[in-house]
Length: 273
Image (tube, rainbow, N blue to C red; front, side, top):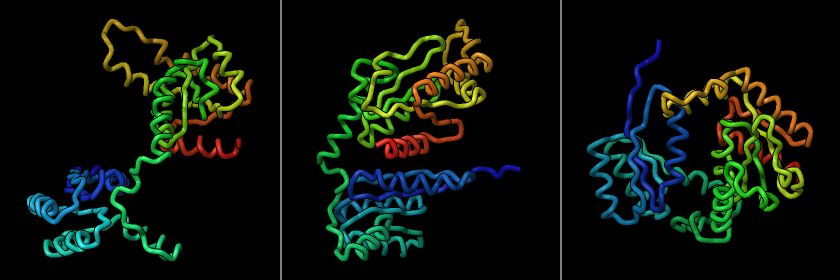
């Protein structure tokens, strides 16, 4: 018998954008299927006055407090106020910084928002995102040689979200749909620079995703073949044949998250170099 879902308040205090905290908080919250976090995000908290306003809200809706604040005086203030209120409080970055300091033999520079500096890596990510958006769903196939990775697969194999995830890591990613009976672009076959990866899944999984996709379509739309498992199996067979013919690796995304699929692709890229 399923337990009723409970709710708790999760307060995230950051002196920068709060993205690191949000990712950590959600990763931890995801482990508790019967409890849902009500997130309160407080970015750019850098003064005692700002912190005072934050704790007025925390006091009204007490819960777990996570923070990433490099100013040690502010960090102590957060710890003390949480202790006074009897609330659990964790500095998410401090244990990691302690390990770095121990290994490197030098204290951290304590730079606020250091991970968001507009350096070459930042602009590489932006360039990759622009490239990926311009080369989504088979657009501009003649530029395919400029890609780092090309994802191919039939409809609803998570090509676009995986491409965007990879692009956010600075990897120029294009994706090209495989349509039953339609040859892939010759520019793809001739490409030598990019890693080309085929994404596949079970017919059952793709049919399920396609049915969900159809919920917003008009009642006059006939998509019998689109969700038919026998037809999908034929599409998958065609996609596998193309990948096998050109010796392109395949990844089954049936039970993989976008992050897991991307990690597998990056691993393949490392081996192919």
